[in-house]
Length: 497
Image (cartoon, rainbow, N blue to C red; front, side):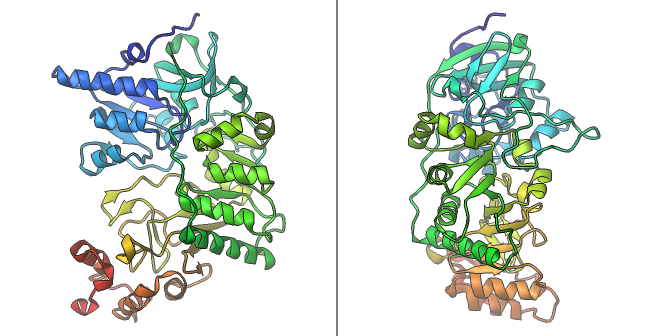
């Protein structure tokens, strides 16, 4: 059947109040831009007329401002999952206006197929190409698009000319069978391709095609500075040492890396360390530093879910696809983040913490235990199944008023049983084979900021005769002091004696 081209405003009319919409993309990469903005405008018009209009929003991960931001400002979101990073959306979540359920990124597609989450009714998919027979070539991410198009009643395609049709071959699309019929996912090497490069959908479900020509709304990361460089160098030093001791195979292992400034710095340090051989990546997000290291020959191949790169880097990649396509593959989130594959490939996982406690528990999501930052993302998918799991963070924040090393994390996302190594700019704490008290000692001495070392030791002395020296009446004392005075260093443990 012939494709039905129309404006974003016309296409938005297919989305009704109380629909649950699955948007393509994973981070701003591959997220539609024109249609969600038009939906937000329609919501504002409906609200002005006194009519309700809110939709459930499923995505791959975070998105661009034209999606999460526009819909949040229009008060058009009834619930959101599985991950976000937009400031306006975050305000709505933390005020209780928007229901948000945080979810491991590998799990959403299967949860939707199981029917344990609200029924998905509409899929809005960004494409670099679409045909009358129902073949869709995605753009810079896969996310959960394969499940979204299969489960949705109708599909709206946003055909974005910025992304060339030559991206055909970048994607490896497969939807695994659901339990109890699932088979092993046959990825035995980072480079393996097991699916097809396209989405194939029922063409009758495509109700609209909206043309656009817009770059992904990926913000450039802050330049590497002394702090992030030191964290990165500490990670590289640790892994180089593990190589020397034979604890990592000589050919090295695939790297999984989180997203952000610290992750970029860590990858740069790995690439710059002459003792670490060129390596591969099996990860979620392929960001700027990966492309730079690939051009230098330090990264041989990268498998991910999205190509989340700044505009300049995106233009660089698209201008030389003959070089990059053989070295890149993008997969659905349930494959890129598969615990099964992480364990099989033996990943070295490197993720970022908001705070860590002296026993190795990690808070990745909630500031002071109550305010959502972004979400757990894929860190849990990888951490529990890693060959070696590493968490990084600066030792302090807010000018030193907050210690990232605390007696007990105010929210637990990855627990002490899964966290093998903690690294700050202060140093390295290898937690493997250590008792709780031994973990506390190495974390305080190696990772805590000097301003907080004695304070943390003084906390332990409140209950040092216990196997796990926690004083339950005092374990959040540093958090309480920050809420009171804005400076954890003023914590007075004598009040808890």
